Each structure stands twice: as structure tokens, then as C-alpha cells.
Image 1 (cartoon, rainbow, N blue to C red):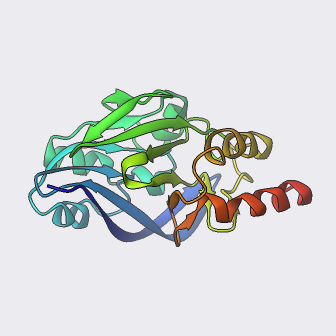
Image 2 (image 1 turned 90 degrees about the horizontal axis):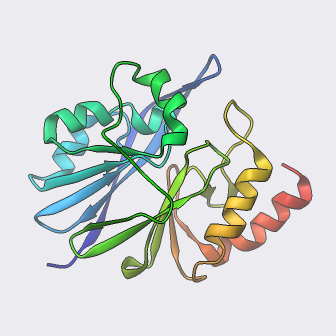
Length: 209
């Protein structure tokens, strides 16, 4: 069976530093007809479970631990038995949302996760959050960037645990080296390509955002 990427949009609230914002999140499901992984269990465990359609869930992979990307992770894990995977540098953020439930395993830079014959390579890309990661799947010609890189520029760095020079270094060092036609599947909004975003990064550096 051929691996595919399924896409679900869920809606909820992002909360940090005392503020709250209504957001729509991309949930990505990578797998075939029998097994899959979920990238970012956002807002609605029941909707994600329905989208899985009875497939075995091998892992719930968190690109970072802002609440809008992880709020449904424990419920999805309880419903499916799948482990929740998070880079340890984001544990302080995780505990703000789930103080009584730890992730099940750690993500590490260079680690490879496999599902349905597809390998997802973990790229540690701090800046938006200390433990932010992207997941590169060469076989699918795509990279899942969470909130590190969007269509039009880097993720936000104006709140706690974020740092603009760090996210620029992450994108320049880890993402712009990927093939230009690599599809960038983001945590919010539309997809883009690595090649399309390279000029935008230079614009953001020049503006000092």
C-alpha cells in the first residue's frame, strides 16, 4: 500500500503569556490504509480519531508544545494507545497545558521515525519554541514545519520561550538546505515550498523581525 498524507483542520484557542487567540490548526496524518502517525494533535481528539478511520496509530508527534498543538494529545493517546513524542526542550511549555501527564518518549535531532514505509527525519529547529522540530519525509518530498516556517516567513517569536535570531538560524541551516521543490506543510494556513520561502527569509532578516 502506498503511503499518503491526510489533512485535517481543527479549531480552538491558543493561550500564552496571559493572552488567548482563536486559531485554526493543521493536523497531518501520514500513513497507509493500516497504520499512521499524527503530527500535532490539535483541539479535537474525536475528529482526529475519526480521520484515522480505524488505522493503527503508531505515534502522536508534537512539532512543539504550544497548547494549540498538544491540547488533544493525551485524549488521543488514551483513545488509541499511541505514544506522545516531544522534544525535551519543550517540557516547560508542555507542563503549562498538561501538568499531570508527561509525554511518553523524547524526540531527538536526527532521529528517524518510520510508518507505512516512509521515514520521517526529526530536525530540531528551535526559535518559535526551544524544542520545536520539523519532520522531513524525502520519499514524500515534504517537510512538516509546525510553526517554524509558514507561507511568507518564519513563525512568531514575540512571546515567551521564543527568539528571532534562533528561528532564522534554524530555517537557514536546517530547512533551506532541503531540495527547493520540497513541499512545506505548516502548522497553520496553506502549504508552500522551500524554494518559494528562501527569498522571504532574506526579507525578514533585512527587516529585523
